[in-house]
Length: 163
Image 1 (cartoon, rainbow, N blue to C red):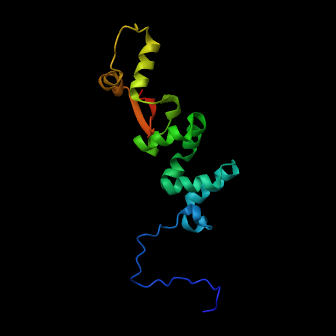
Image 2: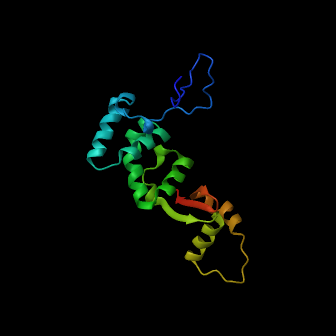
């Protein structure tokens, strides 16, 4: 072999490929050949509306083509309204196919469910400073039935109402 010529590994029938990641759609130049016709049609339609191709392909990688066709526009609408971190946390908790209107139910991001419980009840009425309240227990015994808490990282909880 000539000096400076890169060596290409030879794959045999016994080559262990378990450490190799599968090629994703985002790394594929010809996504049109890999995806279903309805998915490609949806991508073309959304490109005309100025949606980013890379973002759409990443969504397909994370979920699937059917979820893309059915939910991508709502995902983007909610993400633009409340932030993609919040929508992703909600989708992780409830499924991407349940994100419809999650922006309307969004109550904010808190360090904990206890912080949300304290703010929630403080907004309803004045709480005397002399009271010592276990806000985590308050969440657990009353609020968790009406709200969904979606963990999004260290000391970051997105709260959504369930009604």
